Length: 393
Ligand SMILES: Nc1ncnc2c1ncn2[C@@H]1O[C@H](COP(=O)(O)OP(=O)(O)O)[C@@H](O)[C@H]1O
Ligand SMILES: [Mg+2]
Image (cartoon, rainbow, N blue to C red; front, side, top):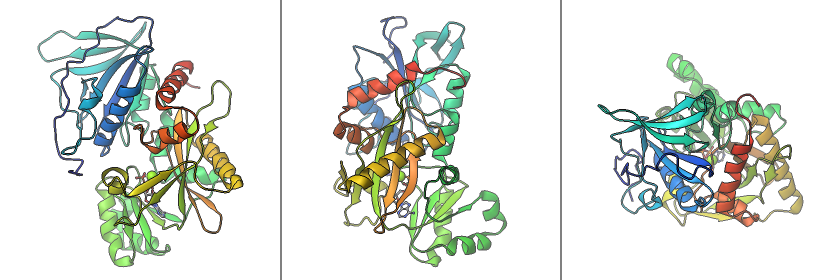
């Protein structure tokens, strides 16, 4: 299949999936928001297919809202088949004739559709937004800020936690302050790179090779290069800069990749943690967990849960995952990823406040193996969002 996420393709965008306004008044109305402006657009659509398929429609009214790559919100097909991964192309939200906006009213929030030359049309109230969006302008606090302004409840982390969790530089700053172990790294800002690239390369080149050169705010391994010697560093920085003007360079860590799914507790309860899972990348051409290993080459990565770990390590990594969740002030859900080194250290790699969320993704799989199935998980996340206060909390 084509793996170029920028290849345009108009699948599934029928725009005819309007849920009649005001029906099912007693059921919470959930706007599932997906697609978006980041390079993880297609991944988001595939996740939405999973959520649209599994969400309990006897409990919730579902309004599917797609966001195009250029940022238009539009009503789209509620048929999961329109958004699933096909062999020929990646799903993409196509521009719609009607744009949809979220309008904050005295009585609550509602969705309003408008097209050129016609009167705005109400699509009815929205009780909660489920942003099934990865990457910048979805997972990074910007959308969350917009929803806060509209005083509407939403699934997942708030503004600050989303922003910190998106940024591989600031998340490390926060993790270190919370006593977690992060690996050696250097940050190259846009200004530093423009002013003196040689100094940047010298500074980053002092880290132990191989290096992992990453856009500070991306995901799905996009823009990341593993660099085995100094000659490849400059090109790797430029490649990362195609995704983000801020770049993080990390020393390569030797260790097993262990992940924990964290789910906010109800009320004042502590965060809940799943059994740890492990990603083992098979060596058939994949040295690390790159985009192809994640989404294209089905046999490339083996996910196992519970990971084969000594009980004490398993317990410890769960504790650390909960510390990381609280350190950034996450809400709802997060997946926290670690390296478990041969020396027994648990080094935190990252937190994802909107982790991969298809039924076969690590986060839902780890919960399934821990006793919470996909449909129940979606239900729990929406319940947590409905239960929480809007505004400062
Ligand atoms: N410092 C590192 N040492 C070793 N492997 C790394 C390092 N950083 C990233 N990797 C590899 O690259 C993958 C993607 O990096 P990650 O930081 O998790 O980016 P993303 O947010 O795109 O998932 C990891 O799952 C791991 O396989
Ligand atoms: Mg990752």
